[in-house]
Image (cartoon, rainbow, N blue to C red; front, top):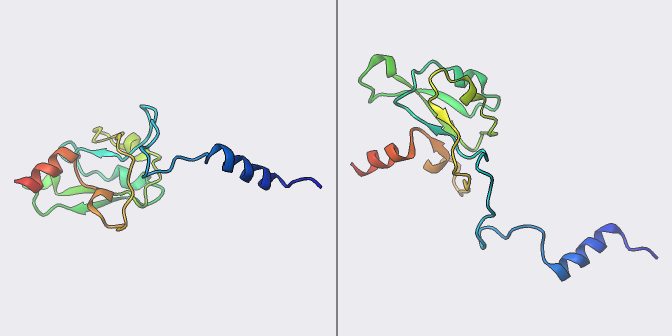
Amino acid sequence: MAFPKLVKIGLRQLIEGPYTNLFPKTPPVPVPREFRGKPRYDREKCIGCGACVKVCPSGAVQLVEDPKAEDPKRKRKVEFYMGLCIFCYFCMEACPVDAISYGDEWILSSYDKFDDKLIVRDLPEREQAEKEG
């Protein structure tokens, strides 16, 4: 009687250990430098044209009004919802002023889909400065 393939794989994993990384118990495996992580959005560069919103296939990029904006031309800003993002970066290619770039943060797990770390509103340094002061 021949063993089914699944049984062979299961026995091999019992002896050799699992194929996957037991994250978060063990540190994540290293990723290449060009790995697509959470996008970085520079609100100061953004002109609010909405090109990124138009090309986003998953609807993760949305244009919102910024009530704190002093310049009327900068009244519209962009928010990225990482729960919807498919990391295609069409938004980055469409941006005429390079306000969107690759990020290196890719550990985005959270129990709350509306968690602040899953919504990109500005560069992380500026967001932190606004919270502190």
